[in-house]
Image (cartoon, rainbow, N blue to C red; front, side, top):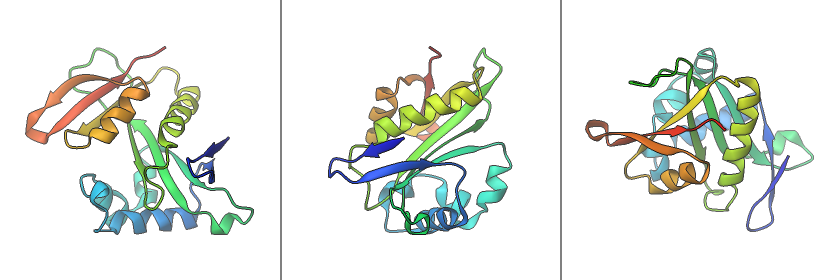
Length: 171
């Protein structure tokens, strides 16, 4: 699948992540100047922690990378991931969390909606019985709008954590 940005750059989906993309993910996660990532747990999860250890928690990641002939020169533009994780107070038994990020300098190019919807569809092929949810910080209004555009609805608010819990209905 090829995704086009507003500026006509092309991107492709890669899963699983290569060692080079894992190193890029780690570098993005340690970038203290990226204010959008500062409100995530990525610094601890990928920057200071181990991607390989995180992956062993039955996580599935989809990377959006620049489309180039030389796979070694691909740049990580965005990431969407899923994995089993309970959802408090829910009546279904198989809940899976989800999260998404876009990285500088690719943020704001208009591909995240299509990339998120694609990733959800692919993950549902792997886990058709999974109910998908996401935790989105109050201040991250762009992520809230993105989630809503993909079909997520607000299920709960957790003021103590400054977070919305959003659920994706099965279709």
